[in-house]
Image (cartoon, rainbow, N blue to C red; front, side):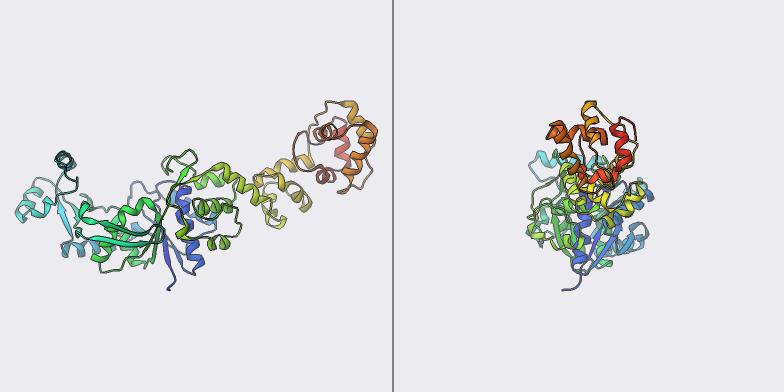
Length: 446
């Protein structure tokens, strides 16, 4: 088998969301596993809506996810290819001019429905003579161009959905070129797939209906169609479809929220498949788990609460050397002992900054039972402190006050950290140190 060449083809008209990311990851990781090529193709033929800032954002998102493209192409730079393909189809009689207005087409559609006929284009434009066309153009009409479908049954073996087929006699001839000469999605996409030698088109199942038409265009241009894999779509936890326009779960938003790229990738790839959803820190390992035949046909829910759970599980396993640079950027690098002490309580790495403040201060202590805290202070061990100091101290406090369990531990936690929750104090106490601990136990901010 030749090495795969795949593509991710977003329109740079907004920030990509997690559904787009599912497409990108499945393409990139499949290519990585098989030693292939991952192409980022910007579908930016809509020059009015396409923005460089969104293209830059998409590249940033892919790099953050750990799947930088091997090749980047822009459709806005490839119009000569599309023009040549359109002329070739015109010469072959497969692309023909039509002059109906939207109002006229809508009237015909309603009339066909009223007569119990399928509302497909009736190919009236094919009956126009050269004289008819000249007259319409003299009236100021400009043609849009439709691709003449062969009335055949187009079949393909989909890697996700299995054997698929579409009876093209039931479809309208699709418009490929608008009245103003601009291209709709279909023709540039097929031309690029041919030119870039795409072997596998891995995309959402919302494109299944396009596939039969695209296969006919491949054949009309003398090319073999690639292998198709139409995977299930992601929806929000409440069941809504994802929208780039509405900003649903944008990758930029997830990144800005402090989530780990491996957590995002793990959920985006594994949800809706036969694989159990779990955090996979290594993208090469995640790539091994992709099996298109094991992806469910039903829409898969991308739950942000599940994402946070995966994120926490990943962080709990991150070694200090991996976290060190990020901790330094947060001004929260208190050393390996600190990281090992707090990481089990983190949902996001940036939360470590709170515990760095607890360690080095200032912290305003919370003291409700002054007599108890004073008694505890009286049996505070001398330094140096280590991991055994907390146990030694609390046993002494218990012996002196008779307190045990939560009644013993909670007042000490509140006094030392100002909080009623957090990492084990056996690990935090040596980091806080005798001087700050004594000040806090005395009710002073330190």
